[in-house]
Amino acid sequence: MIVKVQRSMGNNTVLIYNRSRTHLDIQPFTDEIKKKMGGSYRRFFNAVSQNGAIVLKDAVPPRNW
Image (cartoon, rainbow, N blue to C red; front, side, top):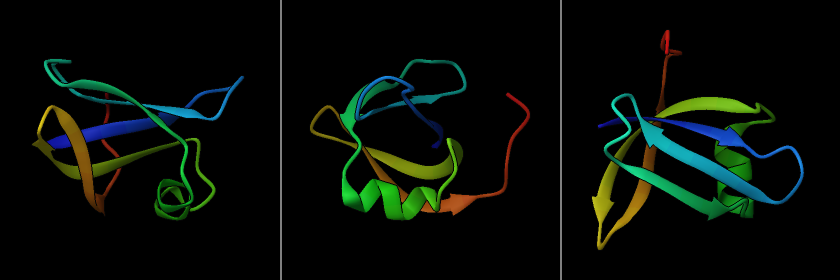
């Protein structure tokens, strides 16, 4: 699935969700995610759901949602 990852403005978390918002997760803004985000506040990724958590894979081109 494709997910959008958005950094929170006030704390060290990210919001991760798919277009239909059937998969939604809030995760800490770890060094691994920081590296994947590459300085952006919003980025899109391929992802999989594992044990109730969303696991980010490779980045994909921006989407219009």
